[in-house]
View (spheres, rainbow, N blue to C red):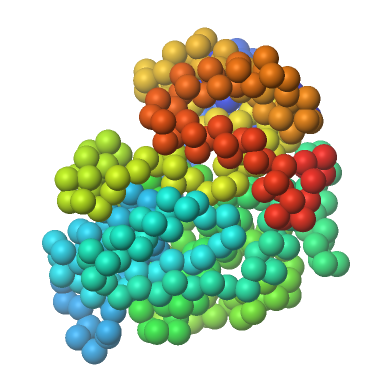
Length: 375
């Protein structure tokens, strides 16, 4: 594990990918040196969203569907699906890509919402062999060893498991859109997530190509990836991020609204995929920080979290996760872990999901056909 120094203003560390501390110990995010790339993402997202709105105002009557909503069963995709179908009367195809590690809560949300809203829904289960091979390669890639070798194909760049997974889902969704001649695919990432994700399908494909050879990518998807490239196919679908263009994103307001409509009765934490603990363990082992470190840093900059208290929590959480991964968690440690989690996850559902997911970390790794020692 490569340890790093904390930024003097937030909790990002010099060991985190892309983070550089200046002579005063302040990271490049706090210094706004990454502002241009973030601004470009937001600007492009708004441009695509405005094009989507214009097209929907004079939509093609010959199409069966105006757009696809990538439907995960989380609060954000439920909210957009409801707005488009019930408030704007769009012809929407809800699309769920079934992957091996989705939570039971998300599955229940999907079934419930589709029934209530009465929208067309495709539940697509791709061949898991390519996806599992992709995720195994990324989780077992070692920090410092920039060579990623999969099935004889070699590249030289790290790829986050979440970016790989979201790129996989977006690419699969665009294949469906291309097949049914649907011009837009809506991906309901919140603004914080959006800053770290490939902005459009070309970027999603590019993130894959930066790590894997094209032949391997085509093998994973069992299709020709280049037909989704707008430069090579004028009818390639466009990926839209609606929450970038909609002002004043407020997750608490969204949850309250959905609960009042009878569409949501869980919590965001319960909807996380089963890889939650493995993502954190992987990030701790490789970068000396939990996976969601950007969220903590963002909330410190906005004054929602105290930096010193957050660092104390992060260090305690890191140590407990390492003990779980090494199999050295004592009964005293277990009590400490429970107390740490109860201070962060205040509802019983959130706490139970998180604690149980951490204890099942080795079991989840085994489903990927890897051991924790390989991470």
